[in-house]
Image (cartoon, rainbow, N blue to C red):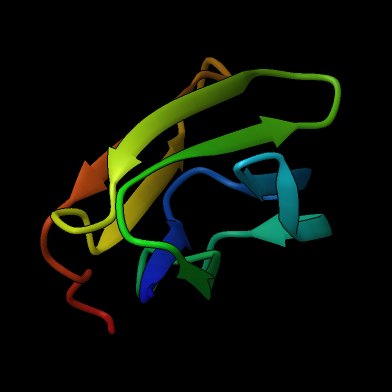
Length: 99
C-alpha cells in the first residue's frame, strides 16, 4: 500500500472538480481556484494499492480525462486546465516541487 499525490495545478478558476481513483471519489470540490503564486489549486494524498489504478478527473459541465498508472512507479498525478478548457492529466515518478 502506498500514497499517491494528486495535484490540481494551473488554470483553475472556480470550477467544480471531481477526482476518482478506481471509481471511488477522493475529491469533490465545488470551487477550485489556482493560487498563481505557487501554481497550485488543490493537492491531496490518496492511499492506493500497489499496481495499476485508474485516476479520473472531471470538471462539471466540461472535460473528463482518465489515466491508468502503476503506483509502484508513479508518485504523483498532475492536473492542469488550459485556457480552452482542456484537461491535461499526467503521471510523475517525482513529487511536485511544492510538496
